[in-house]
Image (cartoon, rainbow, N blue to C red; front, side, top):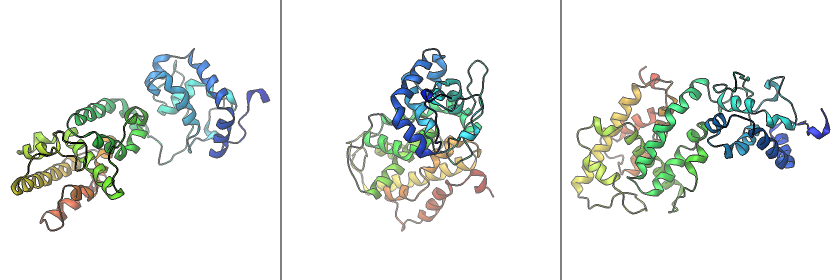
Length: 306
């Protein structure tokens, strides 16, 4: 190995970061040159867009669980590592996409951030429904709630490699306290899941609830339609929310443990903040039942049936 190849000598996370900081321009040039001769369609599928590939490959190199010991022997340990696009494609997809039949071994160790093969295989199948539902929600709620949904599902979007695509240019207009942020993230997630699971088809009366929570009002807390409520309609809305929680619980109980995406969506509402934002207080006779069912959504569906 020649010094001109800029060998990578420190493979720790800090060492890799220092290497990128010192050689970023050269790294970017190496990747760009490699992209000119690589399958553009594969790159677009894996990295979203060819223009994103440079920064995303560098990000992969900087992952905390990147493991040099598990790099294939044919992969160079110098600057030309970044020209090995077949490797980076395989690394990004855990081997589920390959180039010309060449598939490389995963170069990361088991960790809580790793995507199991079962998850990777499901990503493409779920991305479009996820995006369509967010678009559907955006037509029915205030813009801030979309921002809160993105915040609540940050981990899921990162695992699906969608964080850049979904969160670009989205901001929260109204600053609120941290407890309120928690409530609105839960609220946005609750409304999203209501549409995602088509709950209206499984509950008899949802009109009052939808008139309040799925008709755009002003973009400010409480992010509701602003129509005039009577004491009776408030009561009806809270009752409907109770029915929705029951339906969520039933749906979750029937799910497969391997449905990682829907389970992730459920986890964002698995908290009593849902009841707080919908003004269901501890004096309500059904409060404890709803609170318990929401908390159960953190578990695997199979555990509920035990």
